[in-house]
Image (cartoon, rainbow, N blue to C red; front, side, top):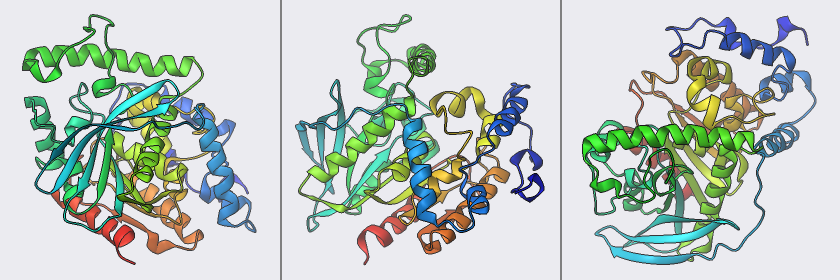
Length: 398
């Protein structure tokens, strides 16, 4: 295949607005990376280079590339799950739970069990976003009985004032929520002036802002330290999230054959990773995280791709849409808001084009949906209704 025959590079597409960072040499770096090994496992390119191969042959190779690129595998373990508290709400029961994600890490979480339904019910892993009140994690999408002005503002801006996880529980889904590594209860303590213990809910707005700066600086450093140690932040989070699926499957009230996941922004990234690598995920809704690697590295190196999503040995071979294609034949909805300032519309459309081709190649085009409303970066009430309809269709009906 000649260069002329290859799919258009994202570098050849005009962007409607300039990059949102000041890393002038970044595009040159990305070009060099692609010249070294130009996305040879990208589904579209691989299919053109291997016209007689089928989708499953590509999926197995691409899956192994992504799994190896995590540079982290804690192996099997006993969850040793426990329920630490239980509160009866009007539409569901809220349990505070704990379980092991690795032999040396134990996490706290919230399990929401719907009431007035026939068990077993479908289960969802619901992820919080990354941006916003970084000191909080799962409390952004679950009402713990306590609140903070920063949390209230976050909910209003991104979720129409709602607790996202609870919206799914009210519709008959069992839901598990944990903090991403480095967020909420798992955020840095005892470093760089950060107290060993503190109650984030009790911080004044001024103290909260100051603490957030300190915590954010340590999070970025911590993610890079993981890379320096030969592992990845994404690897840690994927295995945490896969243990959440283990937890759902361990509950007798949950149907292990009907599991899904969803989240906004960084939660959309975690959705993509979990659905791509854990075949137990039968339906997913990724909110505001659809792009292509070249575009996103140019737009946001210092943030997501350059730190949280760094996967050595992956992004020179796979592109971001390949993660969604890897979920086939399982159901995947991608929510890409057209006014999202973090993900340019050109990248969203290019990623959708690639993903549609991938799902058609897999023989299940009806299992993919692209929802592109005129909105900013959010998972608001309208998006929530679309997500619920998608999950109902694929996890409840038929």
